[in-house]
Every structure is written in structure tokens, then in C-alpha cells.
Length: 116
Length: 111
Image 1 (cartoon, rainbow over the protein chains, first blue to last red):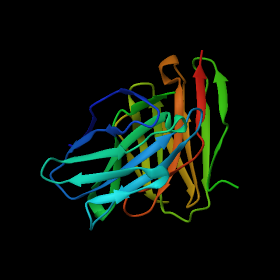
Image 2 (image 1 turned 180 degrees about the vertical axis):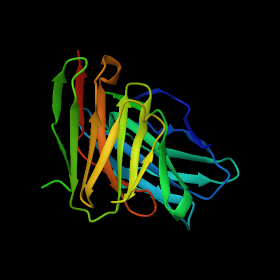
Image 3 (image 1 turned 135 degrees about the horizontal axis):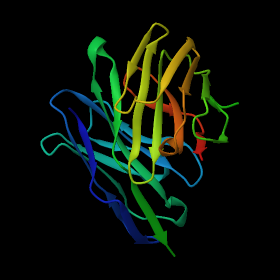
Image 4 (image 1 turned 30 degrees about the horizontal axis):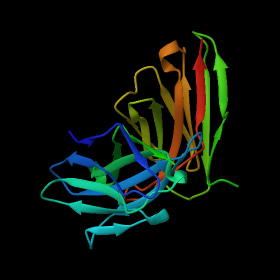
């Protein structure tokens, strides 16, 4: 079975400070990795994804994440946050299922709260 | 127009009623999903479908059923709604890698 662990349920930070949201996963098979963002009262949208290649991936709004296979982690970072980054962030992992398709599993989410 | 459309967006109903949430997509994807979101629990998979003739249970399928009427349509039913099914429900589609495209969500309240 696969699990996705987001180590912090809530991360408060001041505007213009750096932030890291942590994500670890357990899987014995090949995976694809994603971060999604959910702004208040909205649906989820993709921030960034790792499918293959460079382990450092860049996404929208200045976010980036690094895939670490040995530590099974995919932490999300931003060097300087804005008030508008206040949102819920979800890490997701897709694992290979029967027939070759990939099924996404989500972590419980991290609430990023940016204070002025 | 949105790529993934869910109806209704909000619904209040009573215990024991039958409820259907509908989802349609214009992404052209074969794969469609229904997720449930509860505070502090993230998104949990209810059902997924890889094509019209393929329906699979997710981790929390009890109390729910689905119908894949066409490649573009995937509906979720609650045959007899109960209060602990009060939640935000998301339909999503995906390409092969599992990158998801979400609808705006359907907020269901069961009294």
C-alpha cells in the first residue's frame, strides 16, 4: 500500500520569508509526484510535477520542489512568500496500477498561512 | 467554459434521500475520478474509471455508487444519504501519468 505524509498540518510564516512544505511517501514501485494548491473556496490546481529527468522542478508562482529518491521525499519550497500564497497545499503521488495506468493518492494537506 | 464541470455546486438534503452529483469534461481524457475532501483528511478516492466499461472502487466507496454514461460523463450517487457524507466532493480527470484536472467541487450537506 502507498501512503503520502505531509509532516505539517499548518505552517505560519511572515511575508517575504522563505518556506518549505514537507512531503514524504512510501512506495515500492515507480511513482510520479505532484503538488496542488487550493485557494480559499476554490478547486485544486497543479503547482508542479515530477515525472522524470531533473530532480529539481519549477512550478507556477515561484514555487519549486526537489525529488529525493533515497529519502522518498518531495518537499515544496519558495524563497519569498506573499500574502496571496495563503492556501492549502496538497502533495500527491501516482503509483502504477494494473493495466499500466497511474492512480493518484493525496496527503492530508498543509495550510500555509502568510502573515503581513 | 471550465474543462471539468460539476453540478450541483451546492446541495442541502435530508438523511435518507438519494443524491446524484454529476460531472462532465471536455479534456478528452479516458480517466475520471471522484474524491471526497474533509478538513484535515485531505482528498480520499471514492471511485475511479479508466474508460466507459471500467469502474473501480477507491479507498472509501461504501455508501456510494457511480455511473460512467460516456467518456465525458461520470456521476456519483448516494443511494441513502447520511450526515457523515457531508463533505466537499471533487470530480477530476487525468492523463496517463495521473496529473489531475479538477472541477470546482460540489458541497453537499446532509441534515
